Image (tube, rainbow, N blue to C red; front, side, top):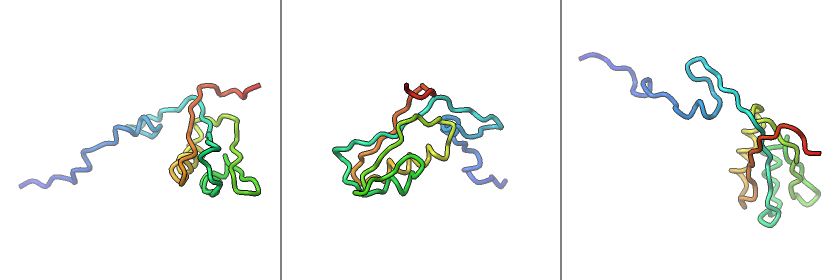
Length: 107
C-alpha cells in the first residue's frame, strides 16, 4: 500500500485568483476602487464600524459614523479587509461596500 499525501495537498483555492492572491507564482492586481456606504436609517450608532475600520470611519459625539467619501483603491488590501470586517460586524447591517471604477476624486 502506497502512502498518499493529505487530500488537501491536491486541492487548490480556485477563488484565490479572484481575491488577488498569489496562484502558481502569478499575482493578479486589482483595479478600480471602493467606497464604504452607511444607511443612516438602519444605523443605531453602536460604533463597531469605527473600531473595525478606523481608516474609513470616524464617529460623532453620539457614536454615529462619519464615513470617508473618497474612493479607496482595491489594491489597498488592508483597508479593504477592514471595510469587510466592518460590514460583517455591523449589528444593524447598515454598512455596504460599493465598487467604483473611478480612481479619481469627484470634483
